[in-house]
Length: 123
Image (cartoon, rainbow, N blue to C red; front, side, top):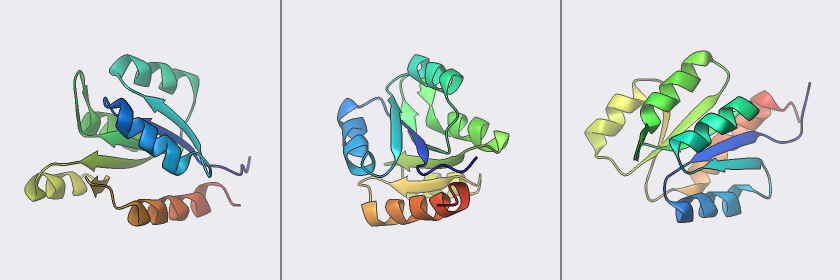
């Protein structure tokens, strides 16, 4: 069934980061957030998402493991946010996960979301 908005789950243990994503993406997309592993589990049980945007390193939750799990299921595009060094980023990119380095380059992230939207929403 075609829909008019991407459904995005933003996962980060820093509330300020989540707020920024909600502010930047909330006008155009349906954005949900999770601050912990428990919140991620509840969100994934309640909804299906088109896009996962997740931080790499979080207490009790490894964003890369989450990204691999959802990406492997084939039902979700994955964007990993990280401040890691270049070598670590290259290893993640080999996993087929989109990587955006902190500080976020919003134009690049928004362009990627627009490409995904064209495939998913058929708007």
